[in-house]
Image (cartoon, rainbow, N blue to C red):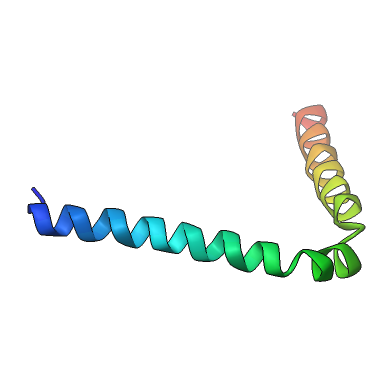
Length: 61
């Protein structure tokens, strides 16, 4: 399947990737609060549109 070296590389790569992603996200928290403060409204709108399409589909069949 995988050699021991490949497994070690995969684990180290995954840990480094997750660590860098966490560091990057924490560094950008002030920007996220400024530019993405109303993102929940977009998510709610998308959810409502999908629910509306599903309701119309079930109603028509």
